[in-house]
Image 1 (tube, rainbow, N blue to C red):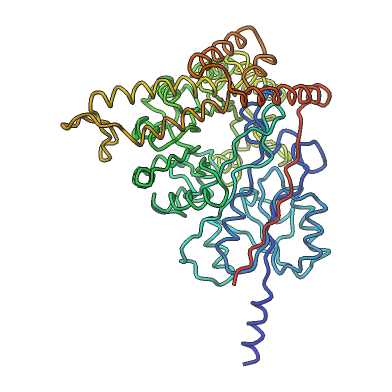
Image 2 (image 1 turned 90 degrees about the vertical axis):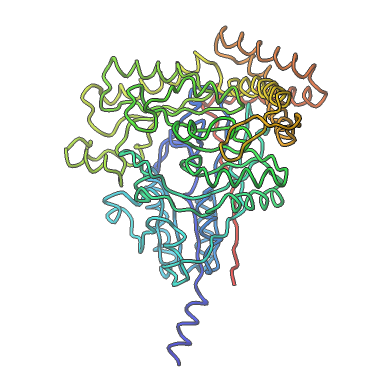
Length: 567
């Protein structure tokens, strides 16, 4: 009986702290490099675009999902400074402290763990995230346990809880600290995490292999995704969502159910997501338009067509079709692949730019721990010995021996690739504006044409078909058109500022044409548009001054603390 009472008391004392690594981020210091900035677009997509680059920090989504789904009282701290972190550890009396990190932040974790051991020696330290795949992790940090695979099931099992309980989806924003030209105009959005893992199994992909090439659903139906969106709409006042799923479009049953629920309740949510070119092709652009996808990330990788997900697909035509239907395309390309030499790498860079996507990511080919590529290159002696983990972020130099390139060359090639995209197609924000306005006109015309012909949406084939009754208006597409119009107008306040700071004459002409298209479509700017235009212009002056004085302007995200007092 005494032992039982003692165990119960022990359970009552359980208290968990979940945290990411401490800031500042995006600076060269003893713990990391400026090129690893915790900013997705500015770091590896709109890099080299100066003040044109949208700026924001994504939250540590997984921590909130874990905290929502375990019975242990949990506190989540996101973006802590060293002072925030140490104060929490000293005063929190935590039985367990979990730290999530990527390999590039290993030195930050080392410092955090050392502090916990000194000032909270009773706390059990759990580490999680992609950084836990570092082979010599035990030699670097003194942890107690590693959270492996899918975190909710692992953590429930660790604390002796029921691993089969339904997942409760947290209500969280997708990003904070959002600016464009120094002005806080980026639309607030929510985060939806339908599941984790990717079944494609590309040999270089850490995500796919972390989850053993399996997909684990958190929201296993489209109805559940809709409910999560509706909950976030009520609590956060958002209707735009980032679908954090490696290949959402691959599960057409979920997507069909989500659209059916949206149509039933007349909700025109909009989504930003990831997908393969093949999944997009199979699903069809008309379906994506109805569902409200307005941003999609597609891995195009290489002109050589090395992967099944792009073989046999006209990527240029696919990207153009998506853009004509209101979907901003972020294409992702890999440099320094095994077939690249001084000729073929230029061919791949030019090919990727020639796809004319709104945004374009260039990443170094990199063997990362936990992937077959890492194991293969390590066994073959291709890895550079003692290359710092904090420098393996894909935006500096290679960390393996490439037969055709020196290390200094690789960083130059990468930087020049981003510059070439920028100088060829202008600022990414203008490409997005152009996609938004031209697609509104195209979709409006297509909707009117279908209504006049009596074409109706077929949920089975995901295509429009003829209907024998008299023509009927497509009420849902009417609502969707209003959303497309709203999306296009979001870009209007930045157009003149973008033109003032554009990189060349070609970009200036492009922006003038976009402005003329806006004026023709919507008439003169409204009083609110004019006020916002002035705000952006003034903000951009200060932003450009800071940029010229200090280089890339870094804004550290605000410290966030959330307490989950589970019963």
